[in-house]
Length: 534
Ligand code: ADP
Image 1: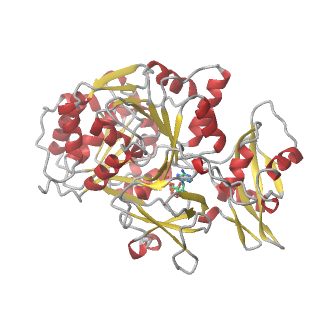
Image 2 (image 1 turned 60 degrees about the vertical axis):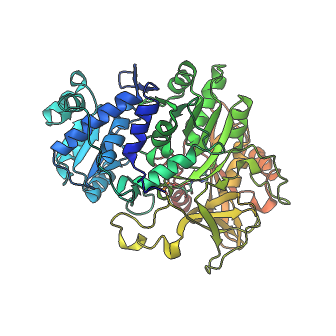
Image 3 (image 1 turned 180 degrees about the vertical axis):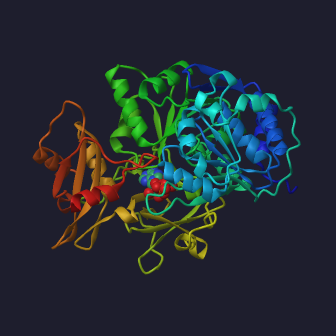
């Protein structure tokens, strides 16, 4: 067979040639909808590549982005990686100090920023050591005065100044194409470099029927931001198969998402559970129907059972996906269509439909004990989940010393505790650093949270360990209630008592107004544990 490299440039070239008129709809900053297609995105990314070449970037140089999901960000994905540079997507919700650390650690030479982040970048501009140019992703008339005062350039002027047509280099498919940092809830953020090959293989894999099931007839709306682990592969997968793209920009409130789904006839969308909780509530409050939507991928954190049930009631299929920054991100997927299996005795295991699923082809999994012995895949024994595969990181980008060895022995240590069934279905029990160990036995915080959220008054719940003299640790639950509800602590505890083993029932419940979240929507349990100690 021919040795044809898998390259990012070939994805967009294919889309332009075979799906050139397929639409890409973006919500831009003034709230209006911008319409373009794959042929235009290809042409404009070639203009961008010519601009990058004229600025004398070298192979492998990093180019940072601070952007929302829109057509310009898509052009940057392809123009930068296709031309042989590394597209480094930065999470704008991080603290400014973390953004400074990440940009400096990556030695980004350019920074493309959405107008809404101009203030953020202007405030830290002096501390960004390697950045030579800041380009604002808008037209000349939309340039914020602060950007002009700072000497930032205008994206549309850059595109207009360069010719189309670019001789895309025939790169080594193992060269770096993208870079994303983990959100760094522990220690400094760590960079993961994606190659052209890993990005293309991952995108191919997520198109499969039992994963995201994408094709020409799909209209994809990635709610997951393009700065969060390659937008879960969707900005690469959609053009591969000619799916129509709807990019929601900055407006991620339920009313705006609902309007896009219904007016643009979105059939598939993807994002973290917190987004869907508020969308489902909005639909209930407004007696809306989500008719065009066929499928939603939920991942980044466990999908609560109640959420899957509410989507199913709307006629929407749920794909539960598991992944990490280090796994590109999708490693496991469950289309939730498997009939429920009986729960292990005494314990409400999250319904089988809600397990995180089987590995995508290419990804392998195993479980290890504390002493590093390999554990059986029997669906009940839990241990440290390790994975390997062509889109799993083998090391970090210029790693800090203590994290250099996370991919020991050819396997990547996920930091998750899981069970694996004989036929490969994985269930994430907990993150290793969040497990609750009571009397030497594990209590799954994920199961406790699911049980709590099955109560109609509970909006969000987080279970954490409190030190206990007798048992070592005992679970305590933090609960955010739905507005206008006031269930008693005892009522909620007895609700839990019917759903989990007696000794799993939390010792206490704290009702709180909200829970602390990371920049990617995960509950920061370390903060809750600290609150308990105080
Ligand atoms: P970080 O590791 O910086 O928090 P990631 O986005 O890489 O950011 O998070 C990966 C972690 O998120 C996984 O190790 C796992 O604990 C959790 N996670 C992701 N998807 C799921 C899921 N479907 N169910 C349960 N946990 C999940």
